[in-house]
Amino acid sequence: MGKKIIFDTDPGIDDAFALLYALNHPSLEVIGITTVYGNVPVKLATNNALILSELSQSKTPVFSGKEKPLERKIKQFPNFIHGDDGLGNIMHKSPNLKKSDKTAIDFIAGSINANPGEIDIIAVGPLTNIAASAIEYPEIINKVKSVTIMGGSWLAGGNITPVAEANIYNDPEAADIVFKSGWPLTMVGLDVTHKVFLSADQLEHLSKIGNKCGQFLKNISKFYVRFYKDTKNMNGCYFHDATAVIALTNPELFEFKMGRVFVSQDELARGQTVVFLDEKNHKNPINDGRNEVKIMSEVESDKAISKFMDIAEKFMK
Ligand code: BDR
Ligand code: CA
Image (cartoon, rainbow, N blue to C red; front, top):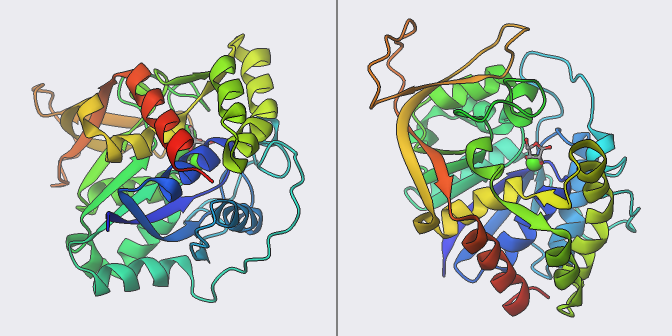
């Protein structure tokens, strides 16, 4: 059996790529999918996670999580990026699979307590579930094997504001709690996810592999690709959340720095991740003893895309 994974997500089109990659990867055993508001309300995120679990034929259980940030109100759902249904407005039929009765927080804590040192968390939405788990069950922080997040930015600026990445922006208090709690954390932020790009030709190739997952991914991406074309004149799309999973399966494709990450909570710079690298001698005004985390800084983009395509060709159903 491979790495035991808890996959925390707000599907979302790039979440769908990430989740189908993880669910089909032979070295990963996704033991549960936990959902969070973000790209869509949590009810829809849970529905979409059930669709993806069913599509992968894994029937991985789905646990519904937080419906809003720890302290703030939700500002808006990005339906202009992911569609009203979060899956590019394909209006997929309702899944037969039902969500579990257990909450995401209880599932996360229960699984880590039952498998100390064995569970890797991948979190590709706002960090509300992860922070809430740390607040309610602090003992799990030292028992988790690793936490890989898609979120934040070291030097790449922001995507939702000039300085903030969307997942961190959505719940900056939760994100700061996660960065200061002591989790063994890897931040896969815009510094690398803005370097990994799936072209229109590669999407076409995915749909021709001849499995349902590939066709589904091409189908949901039409809306997403149009957004990138209209707003950035790109011919394809970023691969944010999938890049975070590839960082876990293929860390050899990445370079990283070690540093301490602080999340801005004031309105102007809300969600900005301010990174104090160990190698710099910057004076830190808020030295609260938080631990250093791994900050992905470079990626071999073509190889990362090839790893995804490999899994799509060999293992997706
Ligand atoms: C992140 O924001 C969401 O819209 C995407 O799914 C991804 O997790 C990128 O900033
Ligand atoms: Ca996401």
